[in-house]
Length: 197
Image (cartoon, rainbow, N blue to C red; front, side, top):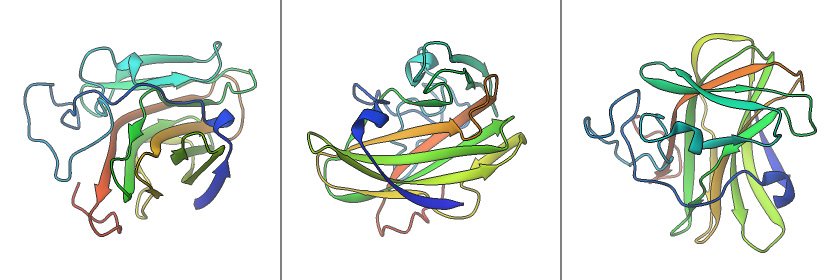
């Protein structure tokens, strides 16, 4: 289920730094394979380059993010904890929007949760506000599934806004496992997010 959200940046402390060099998707190596058009703007979205643990972080020190096997190649596994934000993790990178545009997101997940939420945020620096959309995936999801499966997950960003990704277990159950792979973030030319991916 897709829904809107408006949040304060203090809850969105998910991202810092700038996105690394773009990489191919679906387990391709860093040096081989075609890119996408429009390009994937998610820093190391396939988790195949460098240290994948630098791409997403948990918001609670007791929650755990580790590298695991993906759809092909590597993926990330998040294990929730009982802390205040132990059910959330998010992109460590942030994308600074160079111009006003519609940003679109797909991510592949597996999850033991009965309710996994994937969020796409646009944060206006120094304003105290953020906007975004989320997709709630019912579960458990026992084999790799694309989120969202058949609708768009998008956010309108202004020039200078910070675009980032957050994922959480809505049940707040310690020990829940969420795996992610092939994070795909792109600018939609017509705002409809229907580009072939």
